[in-house]
Image: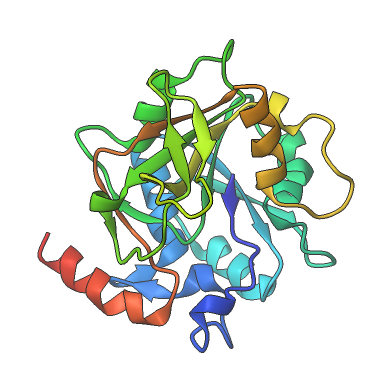
Amino acid sequence: MVLAAGLGKRMRPLTAAQPKPLVRVAGKPLIDHCLDKLAEAEVSRAVVNVHYLADALEAHLDLRKSPPQTEISDERDLLLETGGGMIKAAPRLPDPFFCLNSDNLWLDGPRDVFAELSQAWDPARMDALLLLVSHARAINYRGEGDFHLDPLGRVTRRRPGRIAPFIFSGVQLVSHRLLRDAPDSPFSTNVLWQRAIEEQRLFGISHNGIWFEVGEPQAIAPTEALLARG
């Protein structure tokens, strides 16, 4: 699943007339960077949720001729947030399924991130497996981090007043078990993650490549400069 329904407020004014997934970085829209990565990993189908300026995003996807095949999960009437978006799309998703933010931009390490997540996946122990990135590999990021990893790969949240060593990259492998007993109203995936943390079923792996934070317009130029240098 590709999460593409957000309002893109941090990317204004570039998102005043287009959805954030269509903002161009290094010559192509952000969502095409994600879909091309899925195609390289031989993922054949992606469910994309839409809400803000949905017609423009849907028209762009209709014009794409390259894999993966895309299907629309329509949230025009109500933005369901990340968790609610997954719940609505769940009947069309395999178990487990990859879920990624449509504004993600990264460079793989020795293997693509989807192969890394698949190899580390253990359905007996995990409800979700997050791709995490260290501060040293997170370009343009200025935050305090999101998570800690214990020696077994289990995830816990950043402690108040502390710096956490890992940032969530926006890519995860998700079991349908994580989605059970979900709220009926729009909600964040953080609700499901918190339960998984309490049950010791939220895990993570560290990304061996480079990840770019492209949440604001001023991040685009330095990202393009680094990509141009290879």
